[in-house]
Length: 333
Image (cartoon, rainbow, N blue to C red; front, side):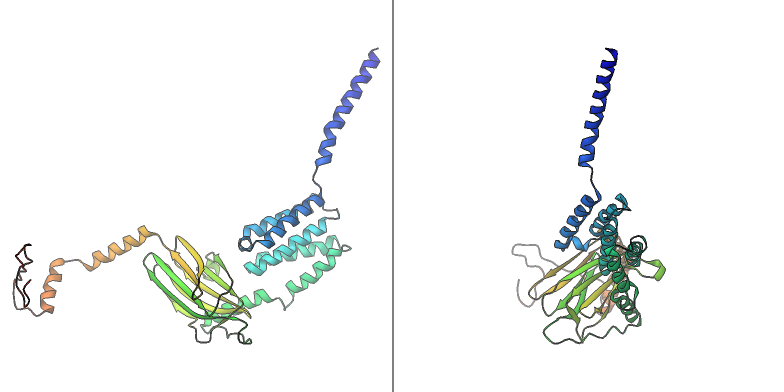
């Protein structure tokens, strides 16, 4: 009897363990599930041009594809996760021009070649590696060329294209006050653009910068490429032919509190607005006024000298209202 009870209890406990473990196994996320979830997120990013402008959205997608590889490094989905991770870093590099993004892309592709040489993704990774490592890589070379020409102050010659196929940047202008500066980019017709704020880089002696990339654009022949501003917020603005079909406009920043980039129509132009701290600017104005007006008596004496008045006292009768018009002139009242 005791053995019978013991067997029933043992069977009951085994059944409980099976029922507890079975749902966990049923709903456990596989590497394949993670891959398709990452792919779905990437598709959403591809359809949203606004989200593509922000780096964190690209990194979020990359993180999901890397999770596929980490879930099962020896599984069949690991190479796919690494390949997409490298591919997204490559896409991000085309937008950010950061060397670290390029290195991450190369690292992912090289890992595929070493760890999964028989995988179909190994051949794909080899093709993309050649694009990133050969001299035909377009993005970093063009960026270096533009930087060099800006230092010399000569600018890059506009790329010649058949007329009517590209938007032309026709002007670069600005106006400012102590707490606000506006830079305007004029074009001959409407176009798309991207903008990005760059951090200060003391290693290459570069200040904080805000740039706008105008797509499908050419730099006008007579445009003033470098404009000194030198107010409280900005040092200057400059324009250059960044790639064969895009123009980059950069403003060098001294200090700012907030900024806004937007476009207006009739005629089409792109506007870069920078605002400073109103409290700091008002303090500067007060100091300037105090420096200029040191002695009010000296100002009044100098006025008498300028007008060559041979009198010691000037009396002005302003009038008392009503019928009293004050001191009469040529025309009464």
